[in-house]
Length: 493
Image (cartoon, rainbow, N blue to C red; front, top):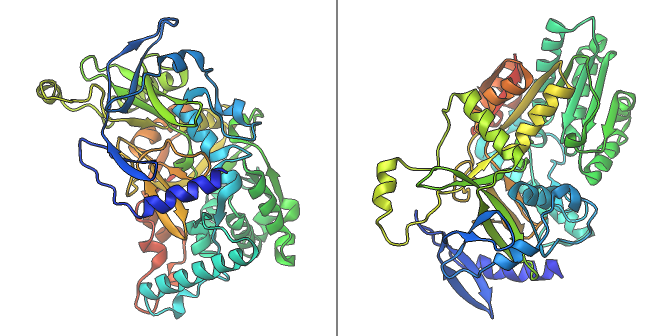
């Protein structure tokens, strides 16, 4: 039912042009087959008759009064929804719980049920390619062939297919990370400790195999002391990783080295006191965020609450009652950065001028704060006191929704990417990925873990640890270095 409704909406969506200005966010509403465009702005405060909480709704120009529903519906969390088989209605939740549920719910979440990771038929022979455009062409062909094979088994117009640098540049990308790990292990831990590697969100398991293959072939003395542990929230991906380990004799040789732990990192409660490396490659971007707006007069923050009504429609409501997790983030961010971070409120004199203009919004643009990432840092500091982190993620993304640190929200339909303008979308069918502001999260990481850290560009890291001649084309162009220019690598010093 959900799938057929979604497909009908996509057909209409793909035939429409979305217009957007700096002051107006346009939405497409399909009602009786017609297209309507509505302007979104926040209305004045409501005070509940049965609650002490003031809340503010951000919705259409003539918004429906949701006071009764807000007071009546229960407040729930993503954890409470994990055992649920269908998408919830008649509830309200924080934005971070809505995003967490959309991406990771075991029954309908994006990564649990809908995402497929592209992997090339075999590694690209970059030295035989004429130039980077030829790599683009071959990649496009392999993408088409990959999806054609999937369609022969299970035709699916809404298949969510995506790729990672690990898959595009295997085994070279994984070997570069392996060199970094072995080098730092030998400098600080060998021979007193084993090389213990934790990887969070391992996808197909390709990075695991590439790292272990390299260590076994190049550093056999280190391999004999290597342990590889994957922490994977998705049951489907955990099964796929086990399958990778038994795919051939070469991979089966690693079986005793690997442990796959099918659970969320946020459920972790065991202390790992021995030194270890913690890999989190392209993971931060899918951590759930809270949404905050500010009152332009008082500069006080208000936190987004998502209300889902009886028809499954979504509404943004803003409350000045900030929950403890978001409040902690705001406090630690301010202390660790010295107050130097992007602001969603314009200067006071501009706000004063805007207050005299008609239809001026009475809340700032949204700011998305990585509260889940903060909780991850807390877990690292508490349960992995001797860890060293290695992570790579995007510091900037194109086509984001409106706001500070705002996400890209997109899906695929008929092999075309369909971006939308809000994270409040049908749960499980859309990828919601955020850029990472490393200027903010690095000092926060250091505050929570009491460790020093540094960042380098994706290209700089690979120039140092990859054998770049292996991915160079005949023209001298190097896709390993030129791709993912918008990514940054963070490591513990």
